[in-house]
Image (cartoon, rainbow, N blue to C red; front, side, top):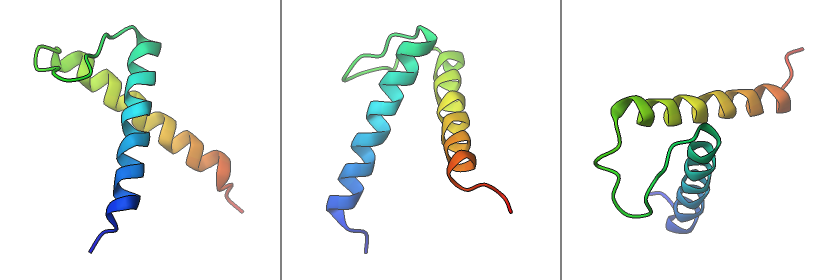
Length: 64
């Protein structure tokens, strides 16, 4: 079973990254409800997060 403390930390980190990325690309996110967010903007946020995670992984795990 997953450790709740670890799960809560990673969820908070993801939320922080989500708001940071949204701010970088000029998308306004509300703290509670974002059901009115166009799917294009949601996709831009998610896609940018994935790019950052992969770039971070590549920078910290160089191929030999």
